[in-house]
Length: 263
Length: 202
Image 1: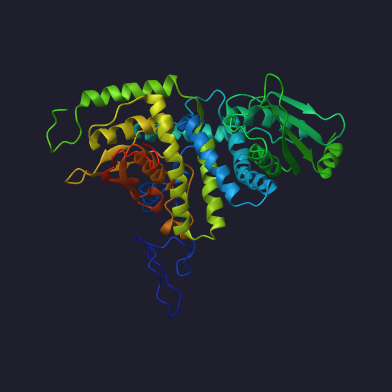
Image 2 (image 1 turned 180 degrees about the vertical axis):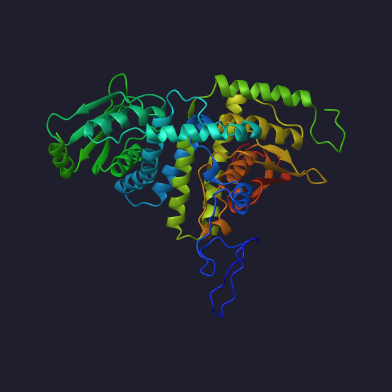
């Protein structure tokens, strides 16, 4: 070190400041740059989830439906083996889905803010290393822009339900939901309709409603968006769609109260 | 029989290439697909549920994942053979190609690398550069020591291979989630089971 450090007159030996990254009272405040060599070496040598891009085009987009069906079937089996009653199975599936929902809200909002018009925003992870380094400055620029243009949070019941019916459904199942209906009887009740649910396509039994997994996803999203509610699935077979499912969303009274204040 | 020499267990590159073209075609044109992230997240919720159910006894979680995989494997092979109509493999090297180039591609849309053949050619490793099961995943400190997060894959391979009369041991050697450089899965062939008529049938 070129700087001469004046130690306070204590008996404590000064810490070796070259390795230390924390605050050292014998030296006082130090400048630590985020790209200091010792730090960046530690973060780049380990493959870390935080270094990966969240942009949709950077990821492996699809797996086979068969693989998913096998996994989902094991999920249901696991729920069945651990439960004593049908409602308990459904509750467990619901809880499993809930964990997905709370993660999806933020991810999908982020993506819908950055995706349009910025094709080369975040290079795909598998592109050559050199390109990534060269364009990193450009990427930082567009990231800053993306945050500035971030999509506004959905504040109304209808908006957030449209988000689920549209964005979430096409993300999860590759198409938008078949209908979004407001109940004529109850103010707080909405219905999302799916004529041919993808996840339970290969499940014929009707005594356990496996679509409760999707209910969990919906409830997770709505809960983390501050729309506390209760979501249930009801199978309503029709002539052309014998697996048709209606997801009933019942908002808590305070959501309606808030909605009334805002209008 | 292929004319390959003994020290290169991989038969001919042309058969490998045609297998790749064949598998890519199945993936592209004949496979119904679903969002891989939904798959990842669903698996994540299964594992975390198991960790809670078994009160973070990760040895039990590993076993449970393995047996779930086994259940999948014994049924998945049927689906695989129906889709691909591939004939019986004439060597373990061929098996390794079918697993990596075809099976992993058709189901998970990834292609692991084969390597680390043992000297008597009865075991090999799969190196998973991409693993759709463990995207987004960071293991907590206590789990990183014991949990094999993707252990379900071992079970799947075990179950599927057993159904084509190959008695194998399948286990994880390394996992990037535990801080290793690679994700390595080991397959060891114990013996080829004989086709036996099930008891009670003549």
